[in-house]
Image 1 (cartoon, helix red, strand yellow):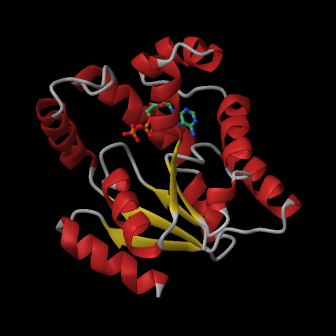
Image 2 (cartoon, protein in one colour):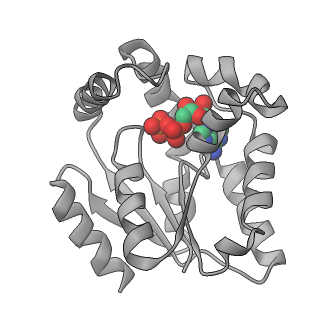
Amino acid sequence: MNIILLGPPGAGKGTQAKRIVEKYGLVQLSTGDMLRAAVANQTEIGLRAKDIMERGDLVPDEVVVGIIAERIDEPDCGNGFILDGFPRTVAQAEALGDLLHKRGRKIDHVIQLEVDDEALVGRIEQRAKETGGERKDDNADTLRSRLAVYHESTAPLLPFYAAKNALKKVDGMASMDDVAVAIDKILV
Ligand code: ADP
């Protein structure tokens, strides 16, 4: 089973992805986590991505598509994966469709976590406090750019997947447990 989780920054994608990994034995593929690891290790990709991420902009499509293309060929992805933070543009979604098609694989569920923008600001501020400001992009200014980028570049994925009859919506304003129940109903 291969799943995409869609939703704005702070929608709870990472939290739900981790739970789904445990329950369904899938691998979580978070391009945000992979890019943060690349920055920490000062790899070529990390050096390229660092400033872009700190501004809250998008890393170029070919970079993230390349990362995902390599990663899904690893043996641990054989049982399926959950994409969290990818795709983030229609071009990435098209590239993903192509590369899965070439491998005889497909996306089974695209789940959108719906959350109001106002609620996100509070959630990200909370996360910044809990993690002691570990993520440089978790601050009010950068969050505003990340939200703007989400609405401009990522939200078009909603009609893109809806047109393929693949999109399922979940109320991301509900409690973490209720969101989990709603997602499980989709996945059974
Ligand atoms: P968020 O909590 O904002 O959803 P992520 O951890 O998914 O954050 O991503 C953090 C940053 O990493 C993004 O703001 C962006 O700069 C970069 N990034 C992550 N995934 C992608 C992607 N698929 N395409 C382009 N940039 C990405």
